[in-house]
Structures are given as C-alpha cells and as structure tokens.
Image 1 (tube, rainbow, N blue to C red):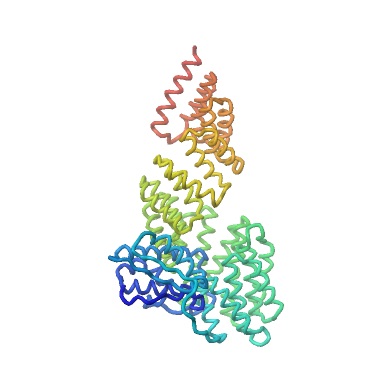
Image 2 (image 1 turned 30 degrees about the horizontal axis):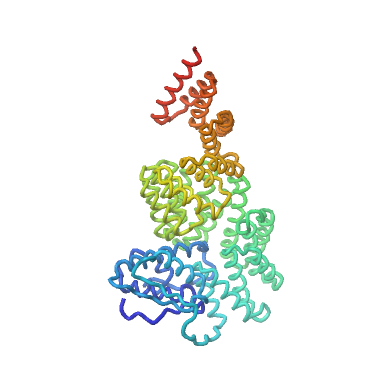
Length: 567
C-alpha cells in the first residue's frame, strides 16, 4: 500500500470510525476485488466507498439497527484487513493517533483488528496522543441535527448521544422548540438503544413538562409506551403503563388536522397495542388490529410508497399467525415482507426458522446466508446455521459457524454451549474444557456449561469434581435432564448405585427420552431388581425412532433381565 500517511487520526471529533474508516478505504482502493466481498460492512463503516450511498434523509427511520451491530461490522472489517495483510510481501506498520479519545466504534474496530491480524505482516501502532489538532468550529443546530440523524440511522448510538447532548446545550425549548425536541428525542432514542432507559424516560417526562405542543406530546407518549413495553429491563416492563401511554398517543393522533397523517400515526401506534395484545395471550385481537391497519394504509398510500411501513406490519402479522398456529400464513406474510423490504436481515432469520420447522433445511440455510450477508455477520444467524449444519451431519461447517458467532459476540452463550458440546462429541477434551471454562468466566452459574464441564472431567476420571459440577448445575436448573442423567452415571461409576437410581428417577420423570430408562434399568440390574429393570428396558424399547444400536442393546438387556427374573 503506497503513500501510507504518518498516522490516522482517530479522535472522536472526526465521528464514528474516524481514522479506521480512512485506513480501510485505502485498503479497499488497493484491493477492490477483496473489498467487494466485504461491501456491506465497508459501506456501513465508510459510506464514501459506496457510490450509491446517500445521507440519512430522516432523523426517525422506520427501524433502528441494534447496538450490537457495530460488533458485527468490526468483525467483518477485521476479516477484510486480515485477508489483505495475508497478501503483504513485507511487514507494514500502521499508526493510529488519539486512540484514547476515539469514538466507541473506532475503539471496538481497533480491538477487533488487534485480535484478528495477530501474527501477520500488519502491525498496529496505537497511540493515545498524536499531532496537535486544530480547534473545531462550533457547528450550527442544523448541522448537529444532520449529524445526529445520520448517527441514529447508521446505528452509532454513543456518537448520537454525544451529538444530541451537545445540541441540547445550544438551544432551549422556549427559544427553539423544534431543534430542542429533535435533540431530546434523538438522545432518548440513542439511550434506549444503549439500554440506558431510565434517562430516556426522564427525557420524555421533561419534554411533556416543557411543552403542550400536540405533535411533540403525541410522539413522547408513544415513545414512553415503547420503553415500558419493550426497552426497559424485563423486571421493570409495565404493560399497563404502556397501554396508558398508547391510549394517550392515539387520542392525540385522532386530533391531527391532516387526515393522511392521522391515519398513518394511528395505524403506527396501534401496532404497539397489537404487540401488547399478542403478549397478553390475545393473538386474535392483535390480528384484527394489524389487518385493519394494513387496509387503512392501502387506502392512503400510493403504490410503492413507504414499503418498509407495510413490511413492518406484515412482519408483525407473521408473528401473530405463528402464535395462532398457522405457519403457512406466517410464511406467506414473510415472503411478502422480504419482497417489500429485501435488505432487512431479521426477516430472513424468521423465515429460516419456518423453513427449518417444515424440514426445508436447504431453504433455511439460504435464508441464513442472506441474513449473514445483510446483517452483516449476525451471530444469531451463524448460530442457527450451525444448528442446521449439525442436523445435516456437517460438523466442521457447524464448528466454523459457531466459532464465527463467538468471534463476533463472545457472550453468545448458546453458541458457546453448542461449540463445547461439539468438541466433546468429537473427543477434543482440551478444547471442550477450555470452551466451557471460558463460558463460565462470563456466566458462572450457566447450568448447561457446568454440565458439559462435568462431562469433560468425568471423561478424565475426575469423578468427584464432576459430581460437584452436576450438583451445581442442578441447583441452577432442577429440570436439566442431562445433569440428572450424567450425575447418575458418575455415581454409578463410584459404586453409589442407589443414588444413581434416585437421580435417574428424576430424569425419567422429566423426560420421555429412552436413555435415562436404559441407564436406570442397568442400575436396577446391579441392585438385583430384575422385574423393575425389565420394565425400564421394555418401556424404552416402546419409544419411537430409536437409534439402531440403542435398540439392539435394549433388547439384549431385556433378555438378560427376564432370564435373571425367571431363575
């Protein structure tokens, strides 16, 4: 890469991805074919690389990206940089300045680069200081509003929050209500995305105290309802408060002068009511609201207008159809949703789940491929695709997907558990133990990981430690059949057969799976309880879809138990 600058300025005054976006842009110019394979993440990080990119036209888009998306962007960008570094013929050192004052997106990406590039020809020189920076001019409220809208639309919430706070410091509700409200609701939106919901509630409370402007109080009422319905921590969510604020938003929407805007606002707010109805076990009532909303939108929208609004309602309806036990209609809605809004990764994840439930694994994998491409690198899509690959007997592909999911989101416990179990099944005890311990460092009481680590230690002959781990797992999840079954196996091996039977009694009571019955029958044979053992073997044999080897073993043990009982 010729003409490398002395250093890239990462100061947060340069906005999200300051410095790193310029670095990635230079690589992209150097390796356009490689860049094309990472277009989604590169265009999100550095929009100037996308010839079709446009600034965010609205400050309140139909949907907001989740805050975790930046981790996926960082993963993809680091993969791109690592692939480029692998082609270098001589070492290259790249300096990044003002890292201590960088935006969160920049620091996250630099961390990902440091992890991924590792022992390659690319060396990162990260400096907290750097050349003196010129003093920035104070931007106008209009410029701050534009920057705020762009950051919200792109999912860069820390920068959005800083920008909104800066804007609020320049205006007052009495001197410039329009800008003050724009900064206030923008700050609340960013805080909600960052799970700082208490302050977001306070901001809407402040807005209602500052003005009686009906449009502002209407928007504040709806946003407050959604905080109570979905954004507050689960223990603090309050459906009744949410309904009260939705009723207030709908009352104010009914008084809007413009009949078209009145319809749009009313339909939009009623989707919140439908969400609450569905959660309250009233999916039929939710369905009526959504159907009515779609009909009213069709009456006021021109063909092709606001496709994302229509897609969102149909997506809501698909979820309700599922709740009503109608997957065919849910699939039809999701097909229409994707036709309306083909760039939304979550729709493909939902449709993949329907395909998988219907046994259409290839179609499910295609949808998950699309979700990963559009997401990009959505951990949940990697995890779901890994599950499908395991079902198809493709363990190595499953392992690669699980490792990718964890590279993007090290805290993805389901992926961690699945990967550890995959290591265990292939006999890679060291990898399984390391993975389980890494997961337990993040979630010390996770029962499934405690159980899996117990299995590893049992395989190593450390039976007392394994017994303790299974006991800890059961303290956290008394319904974990695997822990009862595996603790029973350990106790059987330690010659505590009566305790093993007691554990297997619990497992059998919790699950129709034939394995606990087989194991209990084996333990009962050891105790000389031939008739009881025969009943367990016979019950296990009556289960459908038995593995051929298990069926053979059960028949042999049943004959043995009956012969012993007949003596």
